Image 1 (tube, helix red, strand yellow):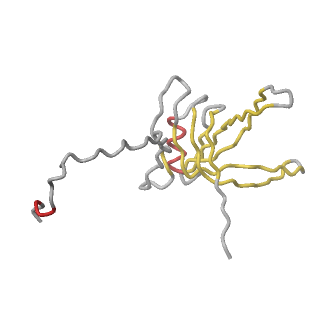
Image 2 (tube, helix red, strand yellow):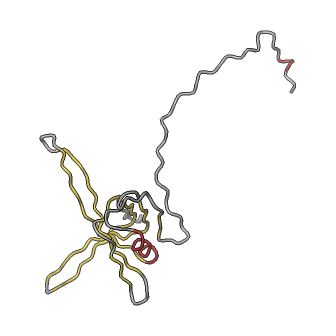
Image 3 (cartoon, one colour):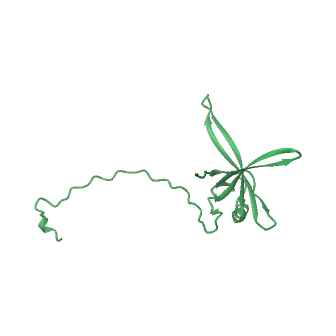
Length: 159
């Protein structure tokens, strides 16, 4: 039986500074609040923006890097998986939706900074480069006719 795919890619802005906590074993758990905004037109042709907020969790070294370098307003690329959970508080069941990040790339924006470095969960695994935009294709120039003249014979070829 084939396995499923649980893949999330977000590009958005941080709504607040990262919240970094550590387990008793010393592993960092960083929580980010990332906003993504989409734009659509309503029936009257007016543009309507919709902002979605995503809770992102980063663990270990990736969480430490996020806590050190990210700040409110900064644009970030997140790649990971979605995870659902629940807990009970005061007899009421609460449901959670988290994005568990495997990769994080700091992008431009926020605090007047330009794009920064990136990080991925695997220490020796390089972060994925940003997608390249291809240059528009141009047609090759028409082939020129040779100027050998009619007196060129196959016997003149040295091989």
